[in-house]
Length: 102
Image (cartoon, rainbow, N blue to C red):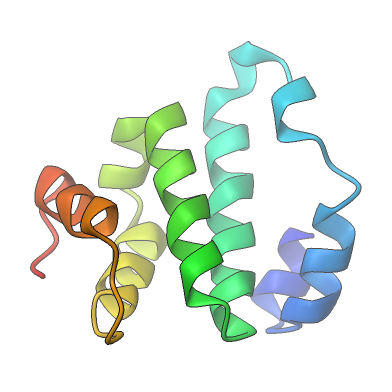
């Protein structure tokens, strides 16, 4: 899934992500779970599904706040999502929490 995301093949990444149940990953792998959610959000945004990308990114933050706060990819994605005309209040609040300018 991560390789497809890195190669910009969002459709394939999301197809592969459907086979992964993040909730079933061990809680000791919180960083991996968060990274997976960030990759899913990137792929969703790459496919133009900005609402889902925002929701997934917020889920990653709920799971591992510091991982999202200090992850350059997540911060960049959040910054890009904030430029969309319809941005949820939750996403704006998240931007404030992690220190990304809205």
